[in-house]
Length: 567
Image (cartoon, rainbow, N blue to C red; front, side, top):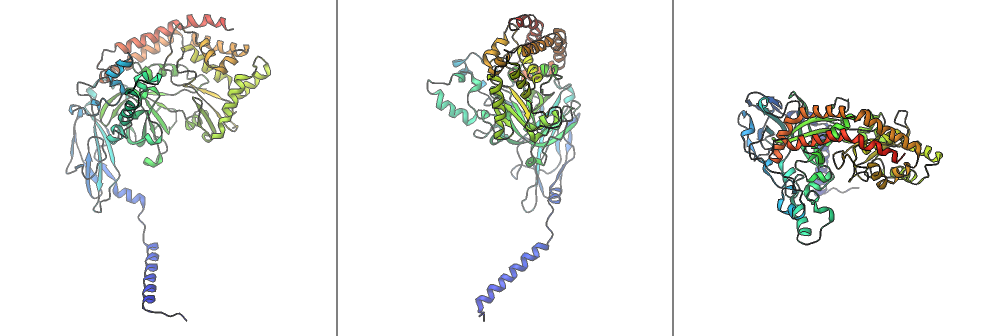
């Protein structure tokens, strides 16, 4: 027999009540997430875009109090309280803010640079009011203090009368300013990393040899990886000013040495955790490809002309190598004009899967000797290939045929023909190379498991007329040097170099391409150079294009005769 006292009855009474409450909760309606988001949604009376006349912007919320900002920062209750329509007009007359910073590149450290190097880049902050857009970010707080999602829009007013935009697409990147410029965590500034570097190295007499050059000096923007990715809102507009994509994404600094330059290239990442999208919701290049990662490319080491990657990649797009597609853009950063760029793809498994009709999850990709796509164990396929192609006696036909079974010889010879013709050196071939294959065979043209090559970074050292690039690469590249001992390989390679000289890179064709490019982008580049270098004369731009034109006029006459030296 169980004995019930007062405490026991109280215990069981409370337990029954609790159980009853839990059961009741099971049957209560659970708020639908989509319905909650719908209630939280803010609407603007005008969508992001280009407007001829100033206007009143109304912000509507389902409920609650609206707060907004105009500087790119995420609004909260300390921000401007919305109490009526906001007057949106041409923001160009507003004071420059972010463009006046000199902590965005060690290239501004003129005294330090001239102590160690003569390569002072001539960066300056604008001494005039640069073009601006109005950036509006808003949230609503309900009576319980819950905050809605951030709504972001960018408005360009009166831009039909401004120079430098004809034929150009526009990208507005809006992000919390601290994401870019915070001393400790900002990804666009020299920041704490540079100050720590100065304390460690500059106060003494010992330096790493490469760090004589200012762009290599350590800074926040030299950090890499997901830790240095920041959330941003991006509005893409086509050349007519039509909004074609409005998306939340991640941004990171892109590049090697050029991370130290001003301006910088920026990678953009579509991620489900940002806004539910794994891909950018626009076919930016008209190829049917919806990328997961894209790059706003400032031209790399060719920043004063931005021509080499674009012109060469366009000329060779029918060859058996991967190339990137390019679209011209002007970028605005938190509403301020931030220069001219190319929007291009990033090489990854998704790119390779789409353009080569293979399963992206079956792709192995190597970049600069490191595994970029695939499982850790897949690296053996690359290392085994390099070892065999570098060390086997390929004068023996059997061994050469085995080489052709593991690499796509058409892709390899196309790749080297291009790189030898344009004379890339310094940071190639030991860097800035990439190749790929499928791990398991597939029933498709490129599903045979052979390695194929990928063209990128043509903007560094190269384009030198009287440069024996063949001997240079033989000295630097063990695999290429070994394959050059095979007559069949040499014959195929040299035939492709001769075809480049006579057809793809012939002087008349390249001259026409260069002139068309010059006519198209001169005005945007004039505005770009005035913004970053205080010089809108286009002297550097025109000189760079003249040198490129001269290279294609003279390279054939130097390179083709010396092929006989290696036949």
